[in-house]
Amino acid sequence: HYPDCTKADGDDYWLFGLGVSGNTLSAEVSYSGGCEDHEFTLCWPDPAFAESYPVQVWLELHHEGNGDDCEAEVDETVTFDLTPLKNAYLDAYGGSTGDITIHVDGESVDYSF
Image 1 (spheres, rainbow, N blue to C red):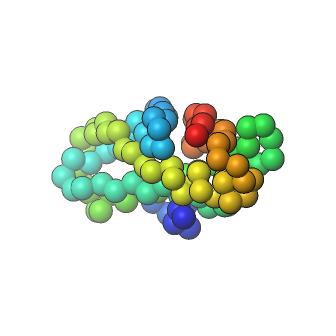
Image 2 (image 1 turned 30 degrees about the vertical axis):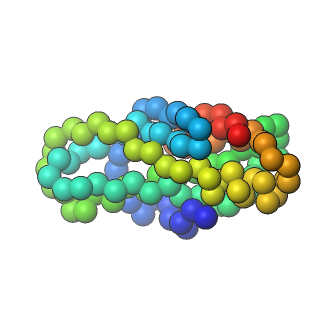
Image 3 (image 1 turned 180 degrees about the vertical axis):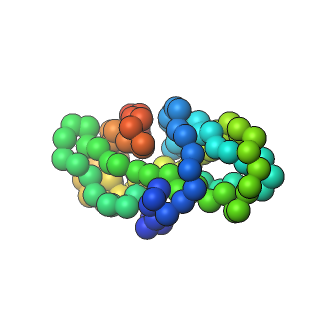
């Protein structure tokens, strides 16, 4: 299960790439900071699948900068476990394999399991 959060609730960031390896989503992000730990959370604000082939989901990243006032440009790769998404798919469609197109901030990546 992914938290019920939205990008709009968080701090600014820029997404410049997505990838999937196994059950892990990686996101290449950039943000201003450098003095505090930054946290990213994967959100599924509308937990439904768009009926197409493959099915599609629109996920969002929530960025918490923890009040970081520093202005260095930080590039980071953040990773997220896709198992909850896989389990939601299997609950909805049955079977043991599936394909999902994941959309985040205008970027897309295919997830097959």
